[in-house]
Length: 376
Figure (cartoon, rainbow, N blue to C red):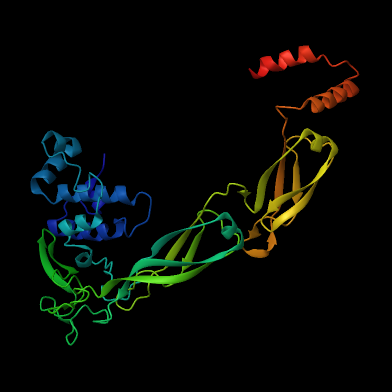
């Protein structure tokens, strides 16, 4: 069982003021935003439970006589103000101490008038397989936010300017005093009228309606480098939305979509194509002209090539993105196509080849019936 006096670091005769002071000191030490020990959260919960009990005369008397079980039996139960977890730690301290600022944790709020970069944008562009291989230029049109030229980004009508907020007098923050069992605490929060800016606009700019930015369509040319692949991303610096309070513009991210080719397929920087040849070409070999990324090129099919074998053309593939002077290979996958129909003369020649290779007489009728059965 927990010893609440030990948790708070006070003796059993401690006064309410001593319990309150000890709790404040321990809370500062154990709060998980300050104390990064793995058990800080659990100890902080126990501390809240101990304080809740010993700061209440009835609960303290019951605890002193019967312990934690006595509290539960007397209907106090609970488990402390943090029994259900921390949730939003700001909410806890708003109720207990009047906020982090009043409690002494600082935690400074971001300055709303500080320069902030604009948002990044995305644009999707589609290119062909060949354009991806060798690079291309594309003119693209997109919408983004630009600083309003009428007001220069102030949001105020021309000839006027933002005025000091009468609520916070230009500080951007307001102070409220919260009274708690521990005393009075000052809480600092953003001004609700100027949203922390310290200024208000009485005459909004008609062009941007007080926003300071305006939607504009822009047209630029982008250079897509050789070797890009499907879903590659390009960053175009400074072409996103305009920044705030003089901050830099965001970036434009161009996502590349490569249209599939009916002829080529790609594996990293290698290009694959299929080539059908006849049995005769497979047996005897041949010189065949094929289409490559660099135009038509002759390749040599060696005699005796097998179905599924490949012919590699070195350096005829995709340029390497970081080293465009170096390229992958073009790999030709050979497929031997068996003819389904033959002329009488061709049949005679195949029969002679059969008899020559097997040393057996060709049984035409028997073989044709088997063939017919297979393909029916």
